[in-house]
Image 1 (spheres, rainbow, N blue to C red):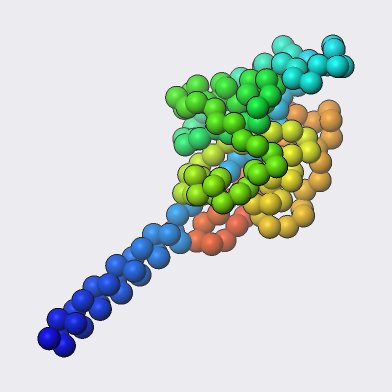
Image 2 (spheres, rainbow, N blue to C red):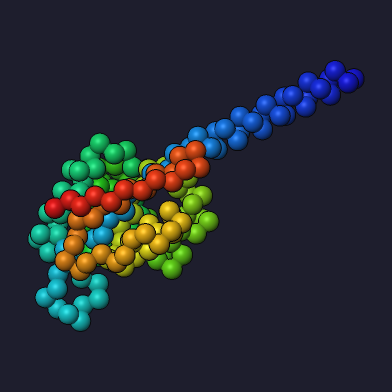
Length: 169
């Protein structure tokens, strides 16, 4: 009887250890970008689309990301952000998932994206805040209004978070 109990305990401990190892060895990678150049011809337009230059930048992002196997593409619910993410989503045969900025890095988002590679498209003030929430520090400031080329890459692997900021012109 004790022998069986020991075998059961060892088995349960092994399963628990393997489950913990799998959880720790998952890698989550986030790519954060601001929307491309928006149409500013009508200052009262709150949901502007992209300009020709912005559409080209969105295409360029999809070329830059062509070898990144995204599992999801998230965007705020604005034309300019969805239009920026759409070419990359299309290459990966994904639908864009809209997210609420006020609850961006909540438990539901963490759970949905754990172990995945994710593109997040937002705004000059929301992307740095989102990145800061993921890395757990106030490192990045708002993006200059004329800058649509920042790429933040955040990787979480084995409980360690690393981040990188690139500027793509």
